[in-house]
Amino acid sequence: MQVVDEPLSGVKLLTPKVIEDSRGFFMESYNRRNLAELGIAHDFVQDNHSQSSRGVLRGLHYQIGHAQAKLVRVTRGRVFDVVVDIRRGSPNFGKWAGAELSEENRLSLFAEAGFAHGFLVLSDVAEFQYKCSDFFSAKDERGLPWNDPEIGIDWPLEGLDPLLSERDLGWRSLADVATNDLPVYAP
Image (cartoon, rainbow, N blue to C red; front, side):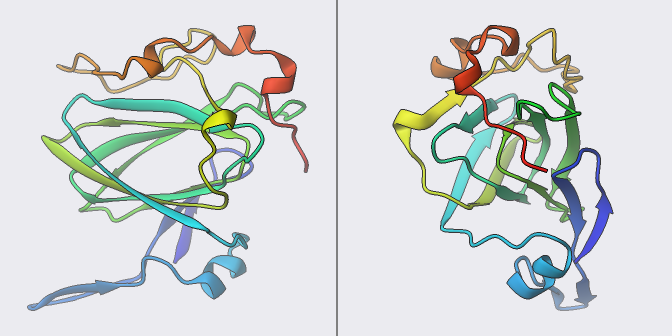
């Protein structure tokens, strides 16, 4: 894998080495040793896989007590993937980065613990897979509104009316989140 871009400190966009021929393709989607050489030295303990329809917007999610670094990719379809730096004391606090991840471009996005994460499905159907560095903890789950004006994410909404869960409709804006409900920046 190679680093394509580092839009924010703690975030890496990765492109795999893909071998293609008339039979199809082969690629390593995860290699702990190679990722460690790129500065991603996490032990991932949980893999998640979701399927969503066009217009579904999931996020922006994070965990406070069991913060999760995430390595994400799309195996079917296309999504616009977003991370927001919510680490107290970070020089990039409140800034976001986004990238289109698809089965065609095979890109992966890595975000350190301390980022809120979400994605918007751009294709008819998308399958999204991600590795997490800590286990899911319902009591530690937090979130931010997808359209928080202070963050100002430029979602590619042309022709889409985002479909959100009830839970994702109820998050408080970043400005209204209690300090103890935000992770701390550790350079």
